[in-house]
Each structure stands twice: as C-alpha cells, then as structure tokens.
Image 1 (cartoon, rainbow, N blue to C red):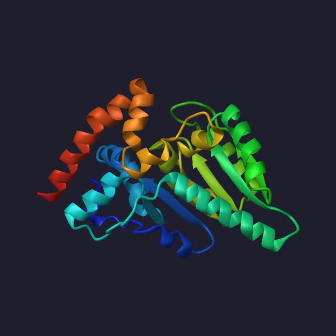
Image 2 (cartoon, helix red, strand yellow):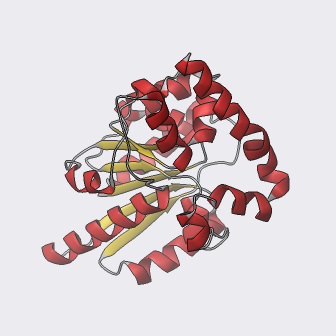
Length: 246
C-alpha cells in the first residue's frame, strides 16, 4: 500500500530549477492517483520510485500536513506548471546554443491531438523541434507495440520527453520500460496536459485554480466522465488518509 507520509514529494516550484540535467523521471500525484495506487501495486511502485513526484492537488498538500508527512509541499504544482516550466527552459537553452534546434517529443494521445500540439508548440516555442508519436489506442500494448514505442523514442533521442496516456497507464508504462529508453533527458508523465495544450479540453479558469476548485470545474464540465473520480473519489481519499493516520 502506498503511504503518503513516506513519499518524497517536491515541496515548491523552486525545486524545479534544481532538477539536474540528464535522464530524470518526473511524475505527479493527486487524490485520484493516490486512490488508484492503493489497489494497484505496480502503479504505487512507479509513483514511489520515480526521481521526482510533484503535488498536483491541494488535497495532497493538506493531507501531508495533517499526516505530518516527511514531505511538506507548500504549494500545488500542476502538470501544466511542470510543462510550461520545462518547455520555456528548453526553448531558451536552444536559443542560447544556436544552430540545430533542441528537440521535444510528445508520446501519447491521438494523431488529431498531436497535430494540434505540433501546430501550437511550433509557434509558442520557435527554437524547438517538435516530434510526436501516437501509440495504438488499446487498454494494453502488445510486445510489438512496446518495441515500436521504445524504438520511436530512442530514434528521436529527444531533449525533453512528455508521456501522455492518462494515469495510471502512463506512469506504469514509463516505469516498466525505463531501462530500455536510451535517452538523456527529463521525462514527464502529464496526461491531461496534452488535451489542455491542444485545446481539445479546457482547463479551469484562474479563479477556480486559485481556490482549489479545479476538480469541481472538471466535474461540472464533464459529469459523466468525472463523477466517479470526484463524487466517490474525494470521500475515498479522506478515508484512505484517515486509515493511514490511525
């Protein structure tokens, strides 16, 4: 069972500046992923053993404080925050280096979403080369599928890699195949950010984010898809945290 009080969680956005160069795995954790990890041993292992774990939810911050956890995150760091920080940093580095552009790769989602990402990223980050790979849409990949994904990533040899297949699939896949990825860059598992950036899903307005109500905004916008995650998931998170404390 994953214990929040024992996890090493990034405590502030300032820490993002301190992440060393090279092959680094960055995952996010929120109430939903914590709940899923209670019944998914591989997912729990993936979250616990990545290089960095960022708190993508006010519930995680409050729970860490209540549990007197070893990590005490001071602010929420959304997957979007990580994305914007890493993209800007790489874009600036590419500009400073000059010559051949540094490369960012997006692996996951549909070709429709990826084409929108390519179009926007080319304008937002003109110093970067943008490459993408859309894996087969299925619950589980075959060995052939995995080999093709790994080959595409290794052949691209990106300077930044984003994995977007929704949790827990993206974290488990990256964790299981980490040693087969012959790359030298930061890797972030950011799921919904692909759709937010492509414009195929709308992120909550600033007010909702600032008041820790992004989950409610998503529930209102997509009740059929999100009701189980929040109506059942939020009380379940409180129950899981209470069990951990007792």
